Image (tube, rainbow, N blue to C red; front, side, top):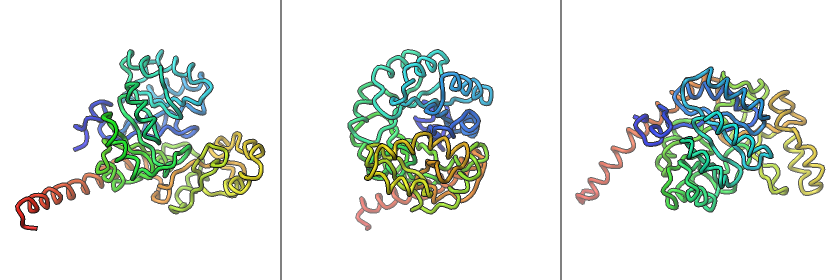
Length: 324
């Protein structure tokens, strides 16, 4: 049902699902597991040095023969050097984030590398379309990590009305219901991150995974708004402390946040770590393999779409015949 979709054909995947590029968590093992399960795994390069990134790409290729992606953050001080590495290694797909990739797009297109860009606004979507990216990922503010201010439910239809480039929906999606809804909103696929933190193949520590399993839909908080860098994280003693301090001492808050993602990922430190996660954490109730997660998601989505679309068409037929 899904592998014939344009996005799947473009990326060479079975299911129209992209693993969100997550700092620290998004390593080769998780990316390869998602790719082997039929999606597009993504290596999150944001926390990596050039040497580590090269090693993770090599490892991913050893773990899967399927396509995979690497995300490239425009705010990364090493963005240019990382772009050069990705071009050298000819990775299958590059996902741009945290800004306008500008001249990078054409360099990757010349190497026949598929390009995608994450946006939270219409203006950036237009810039990416003009630059020639192959896919635009619209990320709603339900997402974990750095976010914009518009929900997925509103952002995706707005982008679908604005651009002709294929759109992928991200933010607040953790099961087949979200996938089916994304198609109805105008997306051709989905990007999911939080659900895969709580997977067997994720090497996030047990504290991190258990926080997600225990979270309700209101158990995330946005920190950094007063600093101009809003980030959605799980509610912990540390994130509550940061939220209270933001308006009082920006310098002190920035100092406390330095290294907080690493402390959450490596040590599960509730008092000094920022645990990135989206609101969809409240929809995650078990730790499963990536294959189990993806197959369950798309079985549910297929059932919903197979039920909904014929009923819509049938109702439309009756309306046209004047019987309703």
